[in-house]
Amino acid sequence: VHLDDENRYGLLGKGAVLMLTANPNRTAPVLRGAWILERILGTPPAEPPPNVEAFPENAFGQPPKTVRERLAQHAANPSCHGCHGVMDPLGLALENFDTVGQFRTFDADTLTQIDASGVLPDGTPIEGPADLQKALVARGDMFVQTLAENLMTFALGREVDFRDMPRIREIVREAEEDGNRFESLVYSVVTSDAFLKREGYTDASAVSGEQQASL
Image (cartoon, rainbow, N blue to C red; front, side):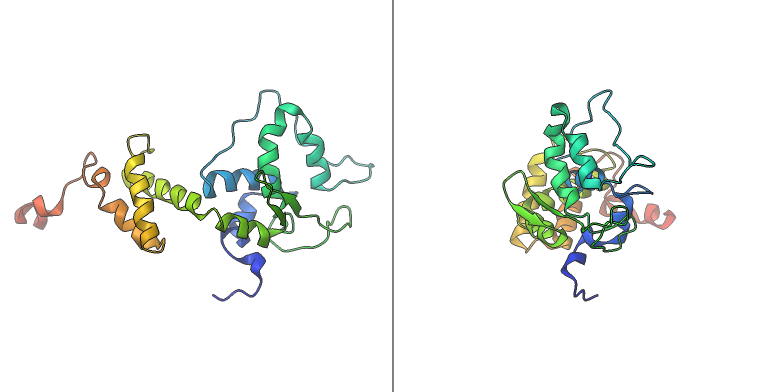
């Protein structure tokens, strides 16, 4: 499928991901930022501190505020800023997408223009979804590592741990040599010792003809 709108490139432009990371009644930059950190970059944020205040909603009869304005209030707490300073710029860059992933330029509550600008923790300025995607592509090695870990987790039926990391790093290097093709990652995973020698695995070549016939 050819896409003319660069804001729709990749996973972050897809409605399924945008709906998954939104609340029913408003967008959720925190959820979107946390999803990117965990699923794309492989660096999940820490759990929120106990007794953290709920996200401030617009009060009836009061002038509405944008999600960005309310999030700034929420993240002003020093105990919250450590994680929000990383998550929020990622999520706010997707603020042009509403709760169902429809692109918008104005906030329906405040009737003001959407501000999707921000600065990433490394100092990279971004202005909306397209810039965010480009910034993430520049960190493609982190995504490949995360994808390799997830594939290995799925293949082994368990969480990966420190014992698996040397092989996962090899898989990432092998994929890079082959242009980071998805099939290269899959092939390296299913030919790894961790997969072939996992508990309960039986090599088909070691099964007798009689046993194979009964399968």
